[in-house]
Image 1 (cartoon, one colour):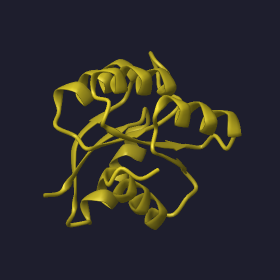
Image 2: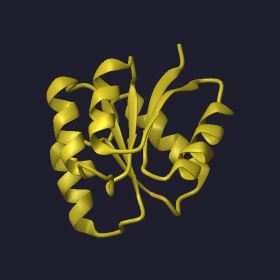
Image 3: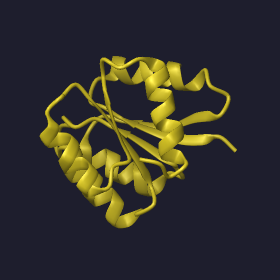
Image 4: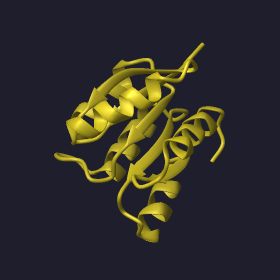
Length: 124
């Protein structure tokens, strides 16, 4: 059964690129995309997803607040934070909240795929 992924990022072109990268993999399926914090919470609770790929800088509600809200309703959902922010503060805050992986947007596709797979297995 494939790893079911929800992509949450406010940049549509970036989401499309992520979808294309992920869907080339036979063991990964993108089930939904969202562009703001509230829509992400709704989709994460409505859709059957294993991994939430979450941007920190989201309109309407920032990524850390989205992660808190989603994990209250779906505590076992794997969250992989995908961001341009290299600040250690974000890393520490999101791991405290319950994120399983923290990937910079300048990382390679291979690193992102490794993070998605590891998070889906419950690894941090």
